[in-house]
Image (cartoon, rainbow, N blue to C red; front, side, top):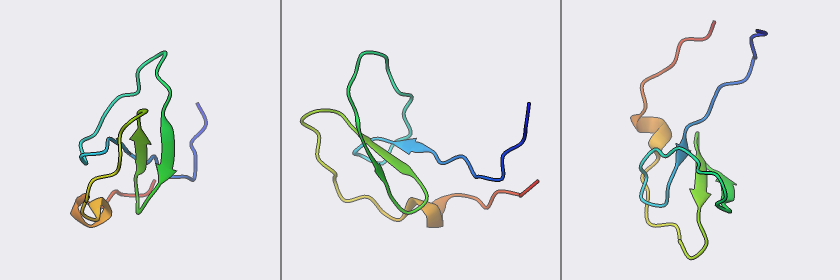
Length: 61
């Protein structure tokens, strides 16, 4: 498998919790400060702190 020079970003729900995407669900994706925000229909962004500042630093390969 090839290594990528890009960093994997976590996928976060509207409350700031990490989620796994489900099949047969339509999401609106928004790229934010160091994470991807996934909103289901009817969900709105709540106030989320800068998650990039709270995550541990990752080592680059």
